[in-house]
Length: 457
Image (cartoon, rainbow, N blue to C red; front, side):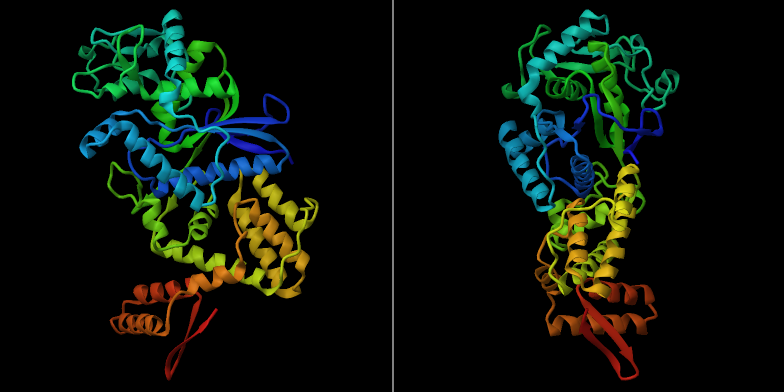
């Protein structure tokens, strides 16, 4: 079966074939680096890390671009608040991003362009749009994109211009010809640091957010490429605007397939900095090892919403321990994956159907069962090799299992006493949570008339 991907643009699964046979060109929107990355960012990075890994495993050469937005209103505001330069802030946050991504086993993209390094390309694209009658300079100095002059605006998000106009509250008094128009070039404002001002045909200023991805995508991947990805929240307006300005400048389809990963939710609301309900990657890694966090993300389909809670992470850790326990029973033999082998064939079929990681993970558990029964090094080797396709199971099993416990006798007895107190108070949900927490750390509780005892899993 050939690879099929859900294309947000067509709202359907499509058979995937790159524009250049054997070579996939993929662009994914990265982070705006004014603060530490949170778990929602981790989900997007892991999702597309799995995508690029599977494309390579499928025999494709992959050129993967994930940009960094290092010029933005939030960045300028934060730098001023901190009393540091914009460059100092963004350099520091990029270093932190790399540390977090490396910890989660996320492979570096082929190119990681910073927006500030591509301002000339942005200016060139804006000039082309103006020459094509799709951009104009407003009275306040900003250069805007004329949305109503671009046929088909809204086709990615499925929104009509009338629907969009009904929800708009931007005053035309700002100099826009239409409330729907969006900014391509922001004129310099009084009091802004000099380091965020560039010369342009329209006066000093800086690029708008949307134009950077269009310019960097075209420069690094060509005017038409294969896959454009990002979080579901970027489909509108960011990706909608990318399509309009890119295709308005070049006359070519920008990306063939548009992929969007689902949100991580907390209490049924999207995790985000604006809502204040976010957990940084570093916060989470203080409680859970990085591979558990990666497994927590990978075992859900990339397009599905993913609910964050300690209970879910505890369950992920316990599940990952089951896989490592199987690998601890027998040393895995190095294997070259035979994709006709039944387990490998099922794994491939799952991944070829829109990167179906939940089904692929189910194959890993079936293989773990086979290892437990057969104790065959080749079977353990296949389990490890298939796990590697998802960036999992490459660590030392004994080290993982020992690190997962990490509780001394006193700490275990404290948790047992807390569970007993919860049961006495008829708070059975809390009692179950404590049992699951201990199981995730390799501690199995055994209840009897004489009391509760424990043993290592």
